[in-house]
Amino acid sequence: MSRPAASKTADPFTPLAEEPRYEPPRAGIDSDTSKSWLRRAMPIVKAHKLSFFLALSLSFVGLVLQVQIPNLLNRAIDTAIVGHRAPLSFYVYWILALGVLGGISSYISRLAIYKTAYSIEFDLRNIIYEHLAKMSFSFYDRVQSGQLISRANSDIRSVQMYMTFAPLILVQCSIALVAFAFMLSINVPLAIVAMLTMPLIYFVSVKMRKSMFPVSWIIQARLADVATIVDENVNGVRVVKSFAAEDQQLRALANAATRLEWSYVKDADLRARFTPAVQNLSQVGLVLVLLFGGYMVIHGQLGLGAILAFNAYLLMMQVPFNMLGMLIMMSQRAAASADRIYEILDEHSEIVDRPGAVDLVECRGEVHFERVGFSYPGGDRPRVLDGFELRIAPGETVAIVGRTGTGKSTVARLLTRFYDVDEGAVRIDGHDVRDLTLASLRASVGVVLDEPFLFSVSIRDNIAYGRPTATLEEVRRAARAANAEEFIEELPEGYETIVGERGYTLSGGQRQRIAIARALLVNPPILILDDATSAIDVHVEQKIHDALSRLMASRTTLVIAHRLSTISLADRVVLLDRGRIVADGTHAELLESDPLYAEVLAKAAEDDLTRSEVGRL
Ligand SMILES: Nc1ncnc2c1ncn2[C@@H]1O[C@H](COP(=O)(O)OP(=O)(O)OP(=O)(O)O)[C@@H](O)[C@H]1O
Ligand SMILES: [Mg+2]
Image 1 (cartoon, rainbow, N blue to C red):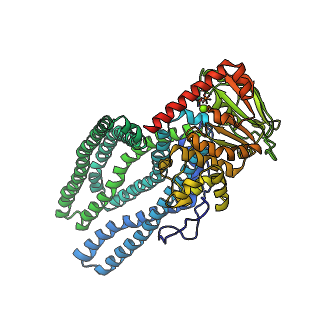
Image 2 (cartoon, rainbow, N blue to C red):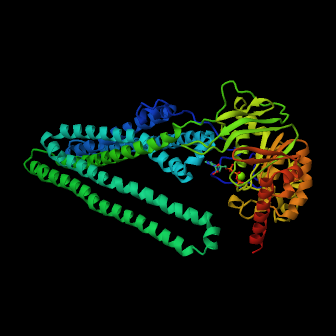
Image 3 (spheres, rainbow, N blue to C red):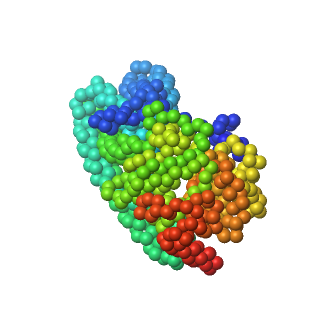
């Protein structure tokens, strides 16, 4: 929310006097799907080219400096220590200076590479989040939220790792060439002997990564399984406990945990096999240098320093060779992750502002569903609405009544353009909603759902969600109108009480009243109440009726309700059945003329009774 928290403690890790603001990503993904994944991601790297270039070049400089040291060591031993031909201090100073400079440049390059890595990650996350925010409801109907969350976390991480660290590894490998050149310049035969084990190290490490790669995928998947079970246990704890299904859940968790454990052990097994092999191979290299180099030193063909220098070079080269294997694994993983990210990014919302869309201004609130035909997107879904025709005059309150699953909520979703109609049109003040900007449309149509979502912020911020700048007095007025003021003031911290995750510390009826207050504060010219009072006690509902009817008087209202008491607030009732309006009139008229209407109401009353009985249990 825009207001700063009441008590801001001085935290050394938060930038002071700076409200974090959402910044749109600096670059996007290339939309050309025929390109390779890396080329599609290049615009993001380009947005950070300065720090990236700084990191790579300084890393190169640091390594070049480092590579000199063993060579200097060689000469220090041969000329100063053994040969007494030069002062030792000369070499000591040089080595110290190179060490310090190398240290500084590798410090700066590390800082720059991590900064680049996290900026790329930040941008990728923003790109995905911005895209998700634009996606339509039909997209969310299809995808699993767990999948989205994992794509927004681990997949971004693996793409980022590859994009930033792969070039760094390549720079390090190029240094291995420089080191080899130095070795050649010292002694050609010994350089060749020393390099004998390098290809072996490379092959073993590639083999290691190849066998470990599938295991690491399995670990990822099983971690997600465990997380899903834990998540369901926490969020569904009420269901679990009410069916006394704790044991069943624990068994499911134990199952998933055992499977995860197996994959971890497998991973450890592979690691335990390969790591010593790689390490011992480099020892073999050192032994070879000692054997051949020692022989040459004994026969006076080589200085003692050369053996030490070769040792140092070999150790230096071992790292990049080992990393080459890692590079292969990283590239495979990054490609798979990028595919999964692009799968989301390449989907485009069908519900967007049409070119030339206009703002809905000074909405009078005239609503017209013009022979609407609609079925939910995806395959052969049945027709929910078919030839649905309904006109609502400005300021009128209309109740939609119908059996469960007939499409009442669907009517509400079409008016807010959560979905687009297949046939006909939905018009507000004569404008097709598809010709209006989404922002102005949704600002003009307020919706209260039967299971309102509350955020884990204060009650005040929850009510002011649609108008964060509202004053406390305005928030109070809205709460009073929704008959929520009384219970809010009884809470220990009143309006500042933080609502528990998903609002579980409040009862269903209390949450509904907060949601009504939230809609009232925005004061939209068109209001939809979709079963918005279903969880509110009949007695309490009576109390908010006054407020509700006052509110309805000044705006167009669509009420979806089962209860007679709520229906009685409406000027007119329509009966929805099999995709269209089958009866239209006042409550009394319908009750008299339409047997289906009486049946639907009787069924609703029965449900209500059951509900209140269950509530009393
Ligand atoms: N997101 C969706 N994707 C596919 N089908 C859906 C979706 N939402 C609803 N439906 C189907 O469309 C039909 C109408 O649903 P709708 O939610 O509009 O019913 P309703 O009249 O509001 O019911 P209730 O009184 O129980 O709230 C139902 O058969 C339902 O299964
Ligand atoms: Mg519904």
